[in-house]
Length: 74
Image (cartoon, rainbow, N blue to C red; front, side, top):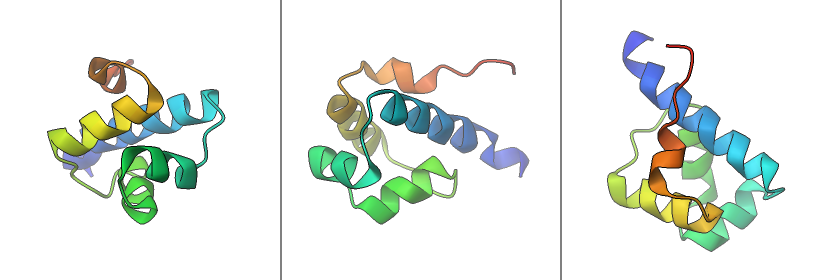
């Protein structure tokens, strides 16, 4: 579980931004070109997305890529 800490926090940031913008996983998948099931796995911390995938998600959410890495309370 320790190794997944980063991925859990990344997923949490994506969920938070997605919900704040009232975007469903399906809509995010469409906008980013990333499969909805893969987005689900990223949000749950089960996947190890590439920088390219993270960039696609950030672009679809209309945020700078570093916004997905705001890890607080470490």
